Image: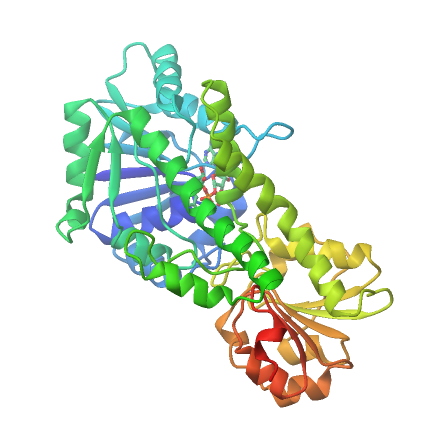
Length: 440
Ligand SMILES: NC(=O)c1ccc[n+]([C@@H]2O[C@H](COP(=O)([O-])OP(=O)(O)OC[C@H]3O[C@@H](n4cnc5c(N)ncnc54)[C@H](O)[C@@H]3O)[C@@H](O)[C@H]2O)c1
């Protein structure tokens, strides 16, 4: 099949490359000329493990192409995906559909013959209807169907997630379009990924409901972690104790500094707005979003407390800036609010991240970037671990202690056993594991 992907970001590029790997002929179109120029030279504009290889092999095989202009690619396509950004609209949290509507207009002008237009971007319920109306208005004569096919891949594990998804959700009531989507995804559900075909509005809502549920699970365990600190309980053991219950499940029960990233913050906010507009508020999600928002600066204050209540004139070493490991994505990363809180209190922040520095420079001011872990720690008054990159999981603790001016470690991902650090004479603060539990 001939597939055109509008938007070559995290979702468009990964999906496009994976569809090409299944044997489809794919063109990824992006209006950002620098992105397309890089891809044409064989450079991948984002960090995603395994993506460079799969892009290179499919370009080589003549199945993956790039373009800045969509007309040619859309005219010859059987399926056109919209995979452009849907950020929060400034001021009110609604999903900003400017890019989606713009893409729909451009696609409308170019389609020829029966074309299935698929919204892969995360979009509010009813967006499929709006896309259909736009295309119909521009091209009353066109033969097309608009389908919803939300994407569930996780950055950092995107290729495996795309190739072996827990499920594929397709929203359409158009039988012909349903057949096209089945054919497109056949290589996947032969691999036993369930294909859920439902109506378009249901598919659109499934995506928001999934992200809001996951965000709720994270926020729940974060609040339980805070309670653990007050009452002398261990959140990791609470999480294990509840997670072994099959009705609850062990995933997304890791206490930490609050969720961030390009999806959960904006998607929870957008669901809140969708629900309010439908006169059916989702108060749980409203609370989740509010609780998570204040948590990030609270984590900054936790660091200040670990430093004796004052960081003015001190240097704090930060390990990990991206919103999670194995990505370079800094969108809504908790590190941003934590670092600003420390800077507001007068600290100098020296940071190291394996992949995120280039993007961090675009959102953070006044941070000193170190070349490696130990250069970040050298002479600092405290060390804070914000993102659990593998490279931070087995630090040389003797060296860390030697390099730090004060042996203070704040581990916001609970990656170290408290006994290890306390036994070595560190002041060690983690999340939901109060120090009193480890004193004789
Ligand atoms: N990032 C994720 O992990 C993830 C996972 C699931 C779903 N999503 C959803 O997928 C969508 C895309 O997310 P992303 O992270 O890939 O965004 P992104 O910002 O990385 O990429 C979007 C790309 O679209 C391009 N673009 C915008 N308008 C265009 C147009 N008219 N023509 C051509 N290109 C255009 C931009 O230049 C950009 O490169 C969002 O709705 C997001 O919520 C993201």
